[in-house]
Image (tube, rainbow, N blue to C red; front, side, top):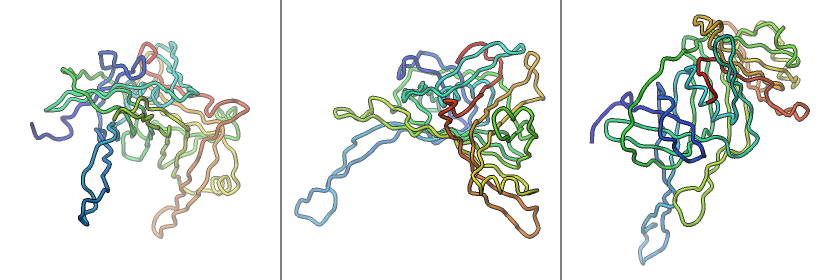
Length: 324
């Protein structure tokens, strides 16, 4: 066994088809910035007595699985597969010499799963039936745009050997962000840009493990209730956002990331999501003496029964030439 730093741990992902089955090759090796994802177990302690005041006599493992977080900077190609695992459905088409991947919410409790490969100084292991429990996108000043994926899967199994192979990708930085707020989705194109100091977007899928008698491994891992929420921080220049939050005003919200410094075909690497029905809430103001006053608001994206959707548009533009 070797001692090594986390940078020597390599992580790869691949779409499973059918769910729970590794296809034999890794699609993307992720250039991660942090990781806690690993094996877990539940230990049940026996509380029986044996003529002694000691509280427990033995412990037995009743369940094994894997869970934790993978953090990284958003790269335009590999992030597309993460988005598929988060949203459930994707289709693509040629777009200005590149490819536009359009995402929609798969209205089932069995979203696509991933196989996760891990290679370090001691082991090559594979995690099957990996599902995204939550996905957070962070846009902060002086940082590369990043993600944090909380993942759950079956416990690891040994694999013969992986050969990591990294592809060239494009990143996003704070100046690539554009956010618009309008009264309705139809008004987003013409809306003025809202200048933010920080943005967080959260996607929650509330996974559950389908445990059964006769096995320490769940027969399935399923997504349940789906939610999108977020937080924005901006300078307080007027009372618009305060009033929106205090009055529960319904708005449409567009989040755009466009790497204008990189040309692919005749367009740029890009990510967009248009949330049809957003309500800002929990407005707070920071009036520190010697700093410009800022405001922080949380928001939730609501499902529209009329339009039968949470978002009207969500896409990723890159040079991946086919569906994920």
